Length: 235
Image (cartoon, rainbow, N blue to C red):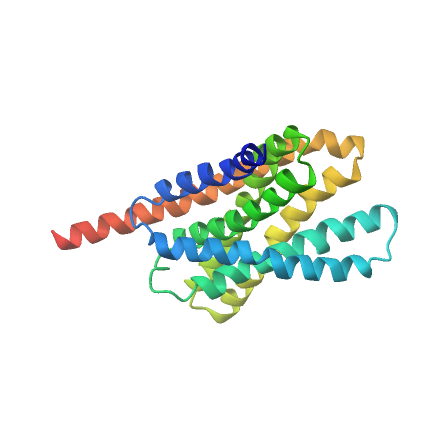
């Protein structure tokens, strides 16, 4: 039974990791570096849990304010901060981080590392008697972490490849702020259980997919164009 639950927990990660790796087809990142960032992302669960425990102890808000604090600060800000830290310390200054698409790829692998451990905790240990939790998390939670990561990587790459210092700081801040807002809204809608918000949940998820696929496709096209220029120069 535990083996079956473990498979349910890790299957979404494997599927998305393969898809992300294959999408980066023009200048693929070293598997060793991707695994390093993945492991850093997985290990980020430790400081996340410690900080979340501290923040929970000082959450004095009630009602919707308490839910908002939990959704945006305890979950959103804390998790996105440490997932981004895994990329900053694991790959940001590495020579293989040499194009904008790489920001999205590394952030996605960091997010997958975090989401894998989180999923195992929920599916194998916390809700081991309910298979639907694993299925729903595979459909919603794990892909959501990756969608937040696409936005994070989008802005992180803009920060890395922008020479203007003011813009660099702006994009670097947005690489944390925007995914935190996306993450917080995602959690708040589900936690608040307000009917009108629940009606808006599916459109919101569709919006997340649309905006982040546009960003992913933009950087994939940039990667292709850069690859073609290199081939032309060699000829």
